[in-house]
Length: 310
Image (tube, rainbow, N blue to C red; front, side):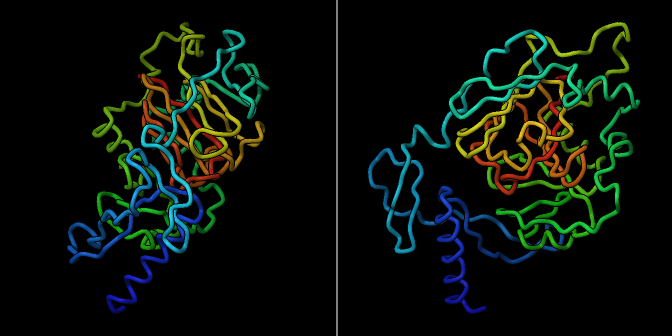
């Protein structure tokens, strides 16, 4: 591909991204590859349009290069709302309508939500590898075809272009949102756990060291993580208490709905699956992080686990 054609192609991709109302992000340029570090495909910041004012933080551009909408810098990505006040001490899941009013809540006595620590204890799960032995991400042995991510992807420590994810079709990948514009992926649960422990200081819940007579259930003081129907924390909301899990988000009419999220601090983050019952591809969201748009995971989550702080 000659330089002129490549530049035109990149420009068309950027305009297509902007037309679906997402902020100016990354374009990509190839650099000389290095076999030890992958394809050598690294993000390069584009030249943004001229801001309409000094306070513009997000600009949406039409095909002619004109800014058709913008958001102030102080509103970049928006600010997630706080979790609603639980209606009682036993509330573990809360569904909130577009008007901000609580529409539904469930306790751990509901068949649709459970205590994650109790689940780990019941099946003697002591690592992420154990978790996948009990809850296989691909129980039917189906051929997996990965969606092309919007950003470069680092698989087991090696950089790949977004379209090169097809090299891993047929394999389960475990994804992590770890830094802006970059997605990490792992071909084994052991690789994922090692990364989380090294980069996050994460530790698998040590439930076997707890007194079995001690209740492992969440309390009224346990934190909630929130998921939102639209980007920038808009639309309907679903709040899940740590440590909790939901095997089918469709029960709350939230299957393939989540577009943004806020993850509570003092937790071990949240893992989302694109299939019910902890099946399919998985993404990890770090504790204490806000995701005003779930890049590459918009409208995909079907089940989740809200991990407790160890």
